[in-house]
Image 1 (cartoon, one colour):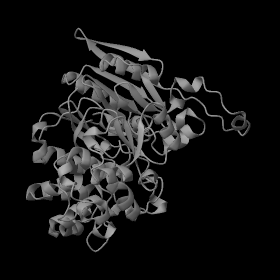
Image 2 (spheres, one colour):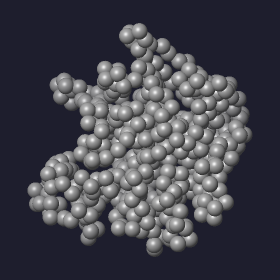
Image 3 (cartoon, helix red, strand yellow):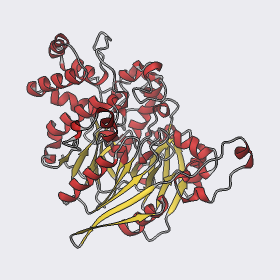
Image 4 (cartoon, helix red, strand yellow):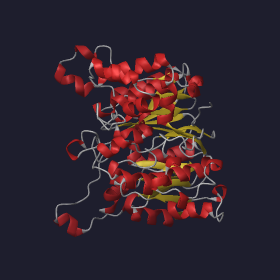
Length: 476
């Protein structure tokens, strides 16, 4: 299978997703934040009224033959087998790939099955008897247990991995290579392990042999005092990695990605000559931001959506006096941006003063845009809507093709800003009806922001960009 990504915006042709599984419905309030969820979710609503529309939109644009005869009126919750990867009626696209199905494929091989059971049992500290019980399970039940921690009798063996819905974080395709993550939180360790087995062993990724890059722990890390070890972990997650141009990668240094891991990834990519330019973007290590793709994403060669309080606009904004008097003045926060590049076989470096300067440089010099660079600000750059809507993923959009992106319907001010920038706003529910009735052709959709229903999805603190792992886009 062809694997290649050299931009954030060119025609999306293949990606990996993971539909909300039963583990999300088992998250309890006392463990929600430990498992990196901001709140508990209503699983039925998340699946039927929200995520299924995400899948529908993806199929209409990437693999329309799979969806054109499945009308939404006939696919209610009671009959949503078409969207459920555990069912035989699942759509099984080779363009919109389901992680659960990829995992099930490799578990068919007895050697890999035994290895993975042993590895998961070790990190989850299962008993030897439980490990033997796993080996007796059929393929379907074992796949379910490894992802959700729950067997067919609804018994919980170990915690769910609710963040697997955010497939972006398990890895990122960089040209024809893939960089695997090293999660910052223990709650995501099993995700990382399962992903590693899939990418190293699934036939789809046979062309990746020798092209899988892993972040490794410093070989002397174990010699550090115990109190220093956690702060020196080499951690990296896919939401902090963006392939913005054929030769240019962005890596965020954040709450989840460490400087050590970012430098290690850059060094390996340079040594392998995968690319010659890496920009490191250090953002505040706060839960508000998590990854760089929660504060900006690209929509077109010359259009970006971003949070103004992390850009130069914050310094110019005049705040409403009442907010200052209430002690709620919005403050601009400092970013540090360093770019490293190879020129005439020598490594050089330069800095950018702010985020807009970096993004403008990418648009003009890497992507050769001849149009003025446009910045669409979260919440239309208005306080307090910028921060409120960034929290619900106003800056986290997945581009299906240049100028056509998927976002959330709850970020009203940001939608107004997109309209002012010349974009059409379409609700996913309406667009699906138009596709079904033949009133609109996906190939004809341009300059459009597609809004997903998002009451439950937004509780998980990740948008459509997070919920996707592009593995093939048309080359720049």
